[in-house]
Image (tube, rainbow over all chains, first blue to last red; front, side, top):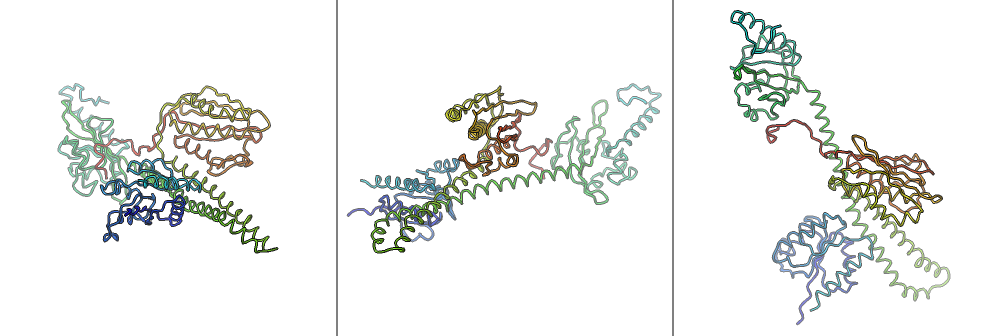
Length: 143
Length: 435
């Protein structure tokens, strides 16, 4: 029996960005299920089976795509929780943001994020960034 | 007039008379002093209370001499005045009684303080008061003298200044965070605009073969119109959306960069501006050659300034000078500096196209560009330069003649000014207890 591929957790509150990211992941042949959450608290609840996810045991995601500016809990707060917890700290986290502020980038890396992607308005670059991510994922999936 | 010095030898015979005279003399001196002043003896009793003190407090000397209860006069309840602490020699205890207090800068063991005081007419006055010991020849404190000065006007002006400074700081912070938030939040929808117009473009590409097939079933005007829509109008609309989004993105990045300049820390250090200017010119060598331009650099001093900021200032100004050289003559750019006791002023002269007088004011504003728009740019360079110069305590200005050239000048103060100017130069014994 083949193991079910792990899902990708996408935490992003802009529905347009969600759709664009998903389209580009699919275009890059990433077939994993994409779980979409639109605020930081839901992400924490999902990962640690708290709040509205208290009753369910969720599969640990292969990867977390985490937007910086999220309602309720910010991306940084979520990142901090993920990296502080033994259960989740090894999950690769990709921070997505609209700013290339060196200060914010530094903060993300300090908190242990693995990759930091500035959402470029340049569509080609944006697709490339997401596709490269897909490529990286397929590499990860290869046994 | 007899000498008032306590060291003066006085014969026993004359002692009584001369002491009487001395006291009268002291009293006259004391009464004519324009600063409200009183003296208490070692038992805290008022022994002297001058006219100015009467005027300030509305209390006559006759009613207060001999009283040891000055707190009532000044505060309406029993409370030690500054002179009482001086008499008791427990000047450190003053900190528990006076929020603002310090040692006198002029008299050893003197104390000074300030506070609001309501006089008999109910008028609020801000009083600066100080007390100092009066000692006998063996050094024992036998009395204390206290002066009171009404500095209400100064205090009000200071408060107003503080309020204005605080307001200004707040609105500056608002502008900064506003620019930052706007730039952040405006980029998110842009990602969508650009992203989905890209998606539409890709959808069109995918549609192309289907369209080709479908087109065959149409004829005449319908066919022409469909082709026009699919091949011209839709791609054209997408292109306009795309280029506008790109432009918007550049503008937002401009605001973002400017707002970051406003918050980044400047580290003043000695900067050799001659070396700095030469290193910038190396980057511009190619462009200078292309424009057939020569640059001369005069004697440039060392300044104390933020190195990166200075690089950006010179870089942007040189870049502009080269960009806007006139096409019809060899370019000439000169940089020199003059030093006054307060500041260094740099001048960058060019023989470029110049700037119309009406535009001179606006060229330092963000997104404003003067003259023919034939050189690429977003109109942010001079806004950065102005911000960087201003943050270092300097000024920037431009003198120009259209068709002849421009001189951009900016100043850098010799001593970099501290960012937060101290509100008061006074040293207090214990800051934590200020109200």
